[in-house]
Image (cartoon, rainbow, N blue to C red; front, side, top):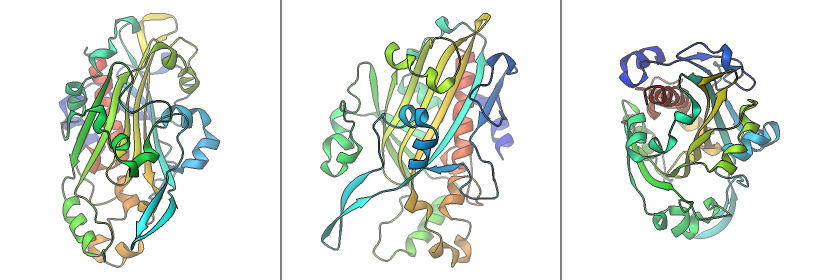
Length: 330
C-alpha cells in the first residue's frame, strides 16, 4: 500500500524510505542518494500495537527523546478533573507513544538551507494537502483560554508566544470507509462520548533558536554542530491523541561540506484508553477491523489513502519523504 501511495504522489517522487533497525548512530556517509533510513521500531507487525510504548517506559528507556520530542521537557501524562453524572473526579490519563525516526542526506550545504522558508502555513499545507490549516491567534489556543485544558499548558511560556512562531489551527476529515465505521461505532455508545469524523489540532511552527537547536545532538548522535532545526509542536487535539511533534535537525556531513545530514522525527502521544476499546467492537462483525490499535497502526481494512486515515506509520513516512523532497528541491 505504501509503495503505491508513494508512486502516486508527485510530492514524494524523489526520496524513498528504507527500513533500518536503528537510525541513531547511522553514519550519513553510508546512506544512498534519495534514500531515507527509517525506523519506527515495529518489531512485531503481527501485533496491532507493535511500535507503541507506554509514555512512562519511554521516559526511562529514552530520556533524551522524552525530553526533546515531548511537547516540552517537563511534559507529563495529563492529570485533570472529569465530571461524570454531576460528580467531579480526579483522573490520570495514561499515554502510549509512537516514535518514527529518519535520516537522509540533502545535496546542498547546511548554510544554504533557509528553514524560515519552510516554517510557514503554505509549506505545511503542501506537505499533506488533505489537512487544512489556518492561522490561530495565540490567545485562542485551547490550553491558554480554557481552564479545563490547563494540564496542556507549558510551564515556561504560553503556547505560540515564542519569537518567530506561527500558530496554526488544523483540521483533517477522515477519509474512505472510516467515517462510516465511526458512525457505526457511535451507535454502540450509550450516553458516552461520541467519536468525531474529523481530527482537529492546534500547533506552533517555528525554527528553533541556536541555543535550543544545539541540544539536539543528544538525539542525533552525530558529532557535528547543529546548523538548524525546525519543529511543528502539536499541543492540543480534539480526540485520540494528546500531542504530536515533527522535528527536523540539520547537520553538515563530515568531510563533505556540500551535503547536509537531516535527522527527522515524528512523535505522537496516544490516549491509552482509546487503544483499550476492543470488546465492544469485536462483538460486531462489521467493526472487527475497526479496533483502534489496528486502525492507528495501519493494519485495518478501514485504512485508506496516504494521510492520517492510512495509519500512523504510512502518514509518518509520507510526511518525512515530502519534507526531504522539498529540502532537496529548494
